[in-house]
Every structure is written in C-alpha cells, then in structure tokens.
Amino acid sequence: DGGITQSPKYLFRKEGQNVTLSCEQNLNHDAMYWYRQDPGQGLRLIYYSQIVNDFQKGDIAEGYSVSREKKESFPLTVTSAQKNPTAFYLCASRTGGSETQYFGPGTRLLVL
Amino acid sequence: AQTVTQSQPEMSVQEAETVTLSCTYDTSESNYYLFWYKQPPSRQMILVIRQEAYKQQNATENRFSVNFQKAAKSFSLKISDSQLGDTAMYFCAFMGTHGSSNTGKLIFGQGTTLQVKP
Image 1 (cartoon, each protein chain N blue to C red):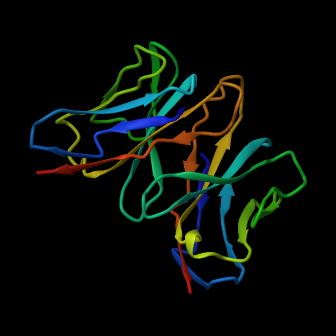
Image 2: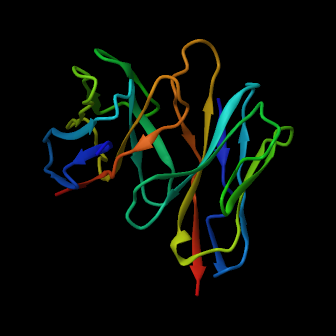
C-alpha cells in the first residue's frame, strides 16, 4: 500500500531538548518537503530536498535541521534553538515529473 | 515574492447548495500551477483540484470546479451540491515553475473554514 507515513502522531518536547519527526514514503518520489502549520494559518515551508544527500532551506528553517540519506526518508529535527516549536508538522513528497505534492498525516508537536 | 490571499476566514453553506471560495495571488511569472487542498478535521491534506496557468480551460473534478482569471490573478473554487463531508478547511496554493530548478515549493493562503449545514 503506497503512501507517506509520519511518526509519531503526537510528540512532546521538554525545554532544551531536540526531537526528531519521522517521514517515510514508498512512492519512489524524488522530492520531499517539510511544512509547519500554526492554528488558523496556512502551511509554511521549513526544508525541502529534491535528491538524496541534498536539501535546501525553506522560508522558516531557523531552529530546524534535516537529512536525506535515503530516497524514502526525510527526518526533521526540531532543535532547542527553535523557541516556539508547538505546531502541526506535515511532510509531503512528489515525483520529479509531476507538479502535485502528496501529504502525510502529520505530527502534532507540543512543548511540556 | 509570490503571495496567496484568501479573504474569507469562514463560510457556511446549506447541504445541497453551491458555495464559492475566493483566492487571489500575486506573481510575476507567466507559467505556474494553482491548487486547492482540503483539510478535514483529521488534518490530512487532500488535493481537490489543480490548474496550470497556460491552460485556458477551467479545471473540473466532479462537484468541484474553478474559475481561473489569469489577468485578475484570481482562482476561486466552486463546490456544487455541497455535502456534509465537504466540511473542512480549504487552502489555495501556488507553485511557480520559473527556471530549470523547479523546486516544487508550494505557497499557501491562510485558509477558509467551510461548514456545511444539514
């Protein structure tokens, strides 16, 4: 069953802690994206990767880091430098020849 | 920089009626893509419809259709025969195609919450 999975569904972060959100896809898509959604707002791009071992900053990359060691995986780390991490995080992917992005189910990050 | 604006934070419609959601955008590019995504209470983002700027014909997907006015930079979504399952937040999104490095970055509007009433 092809698709995009994100885990965990809910994540709690303590002050000063780094946490990692997982995003996996078995669609053989080349490009992957991370978006942040705050209440009542649209999505904003954090990081994206068009190919393995390469990624670029989006509009709100400060306090976040990513890696792209495998085509299927694009984990996002929320570092302690991100002072307001409470949000809903969505991962998306698309194949190189298509304009359409497909989204995972999202991870809700809360600060304790 | 490109921007997308949805000026209706909330809307409601009676079941079986028709509703139109507005979206305007700003860009200097001549070719691009526009999308409407639906986000129901589950928060899963679902593609509703897409339009390529160079195509004159408005896109249609079953009960969903768009009114694309390129000169006015307007991209509204019409939902016909509204159903209770259409209750969701709807996002308009823009993707540019400038240059050879088409990154696929989506720029989203703020969203419109649609309530379909029985």
